[in-house]
Image (cartoon, rainbow, N blue to C red; front, side, top):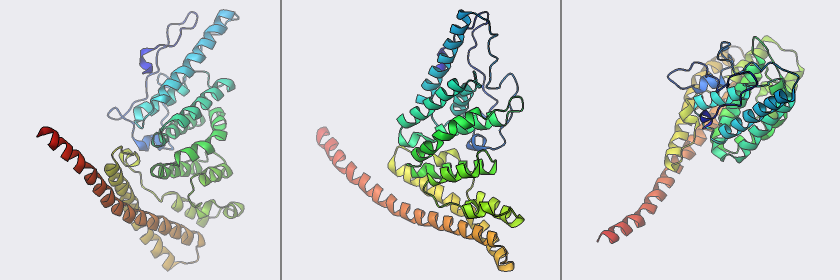
Length: 334
């Protein structure tokens, strides 16, 4: 919807228009690319930053600069209001965040405040794309080869606990939040204390390797082995399995597929860890990692059984609701 408007032109500059997106595969950006820690560095012509107009000591130029900042914030607010889980839209909104004046604290704070405000206004099941946008912006600014910056990361940080809590009100989205936090911990995006605080907002048990007692001890080879084993407890799920469906029966079937994918992913890892523990039980870290996987596997097995029962109940209710409607139609026809 923002495509129809161009930003105001700075003095002596042609209208800037919208920044072109980075190259995508088949027109979409998959969930793996959105969550990837190795964010591809786009070329200068496609980067999210746009050269700022040359500053002149005049009131007119200050007004132009203010107009452009306001246009940027208004455009982002409009895009966030229509945000969905498509990779193309997430990439577009993230690039709008990086389009102008990334070093201005007031401007960045206003953008982040708008981000949280629009997330609160969104439907419960439509909030996970907001975390994708924040993830994209933080990674791009912190890993930029030309001008790395922590301003967005630091400005987002005090807003993230509330954002994580909002997203985790949807059980289907909680697993995606967990994967994002594991990625942030692996890439050391934030200090471990901050990651632990965000994890507690999910309501999930803290991985053993993330506890304060583990953090106080020196990092050994077995501890690193434990940490990475715990990181990879869930597969890369297709975006369709993480999204919610409007129809209650279809939504239940998607959640069943989601649980099956995780159980099938964990089973061989549990068997491999079990064999290791049998052969060498001296590694406490490996034992804890194996136990963590078993706990997660059992949780999803139980959820799978509960969902299968719920499918029968939901299908029965839908059929009951259709019977009166069918009778009414038959009566009206006769």
